[in-house]
Image (cartoon, rainbow over all chains, first blue to last red; front, side, top):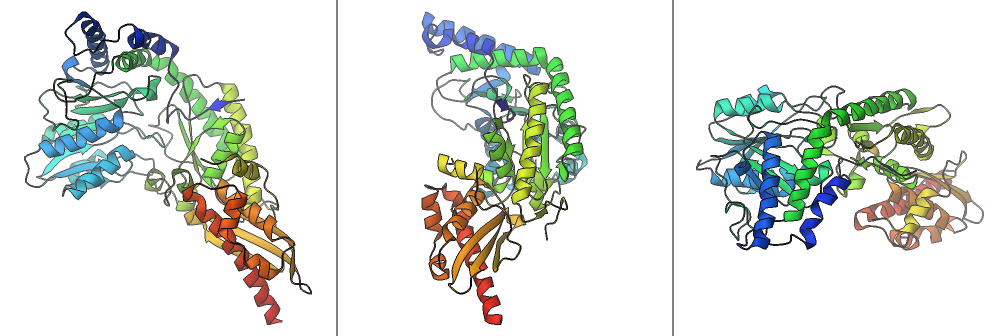
Length: 393
Length: 126
């Protein structure tokens, strides 16, 4: 049996999305910037896609900018806003659990003299909006908080944070990459000034995303060149991927409620069974305010990458927050931010469900996981198989 | 990123377990770094030959595969020969490890050396 439980890494392209894209490779291949009919036909598809995406987000079409994906969108939002600011000193606020596309960009801005405050989260992985309010200074240019976390699925109080930012006259950006599939977003109701998305997280193609920029917000350009995207983001307009992204977002919004019900039911079943049936198993993050497709658990006395690799041998794809799987020395900064001890952060596994995940797949995964944990505990110097107990000392 | 040889050894590691009356035990690494390797050696004191080796490892696939290879290599070797085993020999048997996993083979070399040191301490103490 092959089971894909890494939907937070990427998703399969929807067949309807693929069909929508296909005419724009070999038939309607003109450059949308060209004046002739070939170009105009492509431009028409791009305009429609932009309008569709805008209406789903409660935005205006002129506020949607196409990018190569959320990493570029996040880079542009942060660097663009900071560099466009006229403040003599510049400060921004983000959280301790952001994706590397935000974290690494912040570290780059720090080299330019920007001061960054990283707001801590509670043990459920949630940012307290009051902590953000308290961190605001005279020179705060920007607040960037993810809509939901990619590793342990904590959904952040974005609307409240947006309200604080609006009241204080500070720009508010959110990386909504992981949230959009399950969480409806309205940029006006949530006081969002900038929002990043990647199509491949919601059954669209890889290599395409958007940055929503509220009209009136000034950002420095990140990519220089031609006059595409109202002169704000250069590069030949990627018609097929844009069409595919719009289609994927349309399907995502259309089927959201049904998919959420399906995934959250399977998620809860999964968590309950594993906590009951696997000794020394722990859920990372809270059960409320959690993405419907996210399960993140740690397993005592064994290491995460070896769990991942053993499951892989049985056809099950998951990801791990262990240092070993990322190639760094530190385990996941997100799992550590929850207050989880390092040893257990090394053993964390993310199972990210998809809209097509079945109960049979979950049952197979749980049974295989139990065998995997037993096998690795049998090899672990920290676990006594006869007694069925372990110790880290 | 792992080659088939590493995956195969990880899936079917040899010498997993403990030796209850081991002549030397070596433990290296720590849990907060994500790797602990424990090697048990049975040594023929007359001949100075390693007659059996087992391991218990908390760690990634490369750490488990390195433990299997290293314990397999020392069996039948004299202490002097076993001390000459380098992490590069472990990597070679594994037909290569990703760069960030080389430290797993180093741990295996160190665990063997620690177990021998433990044995030598016991012998000289008597």
